[in-house]
Length: 143
Figure 1 (tube, one colour):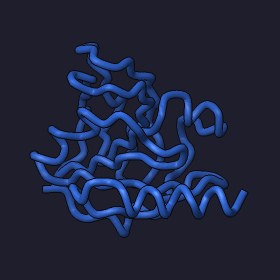
Figure 2 (spheres, helix red, strand yellow; figure 1 turned 90 degrees about the vertical axis):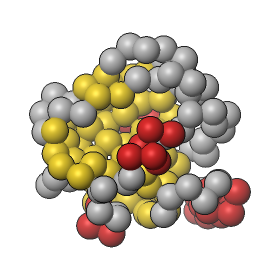
Figure 3 (cartoon, one colour; figure 1 turned 45 degrees about the vertical axis):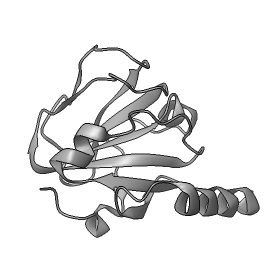
């Protein structure tokens, strides 16, 4: 299992486009590698046009201020799940998002972060509302 985790991390850090800083996060027992999107341009691009996301990889959206931010899946090829996260690291809500749709998905409270992962990742790993994400302090500041 450790070999698979190390191989996934190597693949993620070596082969992903250098659009944002990459950080390690932890949710429960799960280690995650996340590309960051902390500028308006990187948040607008998100995971659009990507055709692959490794099993424990995601994208962490970092906002300038906490709010009830919303997402859609226009030009996004991958089915994703998104966790909206408060400034203290606690998960506010988790939503499933279908590829190439304009259905809105919103935070159910003031979120400073949003974490997109492969569809069903949170459910498969027992991650629910109220659980805290560790490692957010190392994330760049939202612009």
